[in-house]
Image 1 (cartoon, one colour):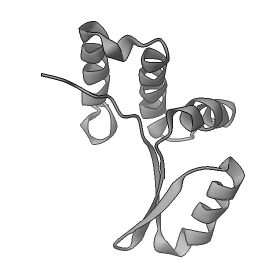
Image 2 (cartoon, helix red, strand yellow):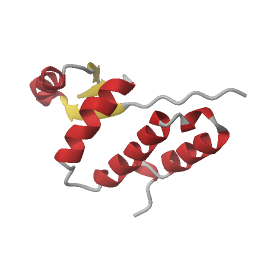
Image 3 (tube, one colour):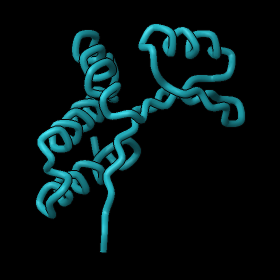
Image 4 (spheres, helix red, strand yellow):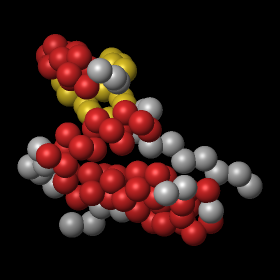
Length: 108
């Protein structure tokens, strides 16, 4: 069985904040905006953009919420990928374990 690791960084906001999301695209020089019901999702999917723009920004300006724990795990996955660890079973298993504890699956 073959596996593929895709790293996406997603910011969701209510539709009234559309201009904020568009400003983030201008600021970072990357990202795609999608409308989902009453919300907008700003998706960063290119690894180089995530590694060179998104992670450094949020490392410099840390999140001030419980989401900081998810961000730290996200950074661990990015580092595994940067070191090509996602290409072996040990790295894939570590990524799976990190993913299992992120977002709504995190136990506080």
